[in-house]
Length: 74
Image (cartoon, rainbow, N blue to C red):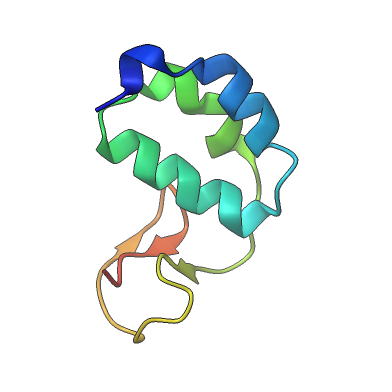
């Protein structure tokens, strides 16, 4: 909703200070709200070993997203 008011560059630079699993979840979310892949390339480059659940406290179900290395359990 507020994408037009979000300074995406600053937001992504700040996000890169977070842990890698959080960065991957954020990348997945931003891609699903329509942020262009080119803008998300820095987030996509972050390496993470193994899949993480989107909802860290949620059940262990749902499809795997290889690009973002997350299990879509929402």
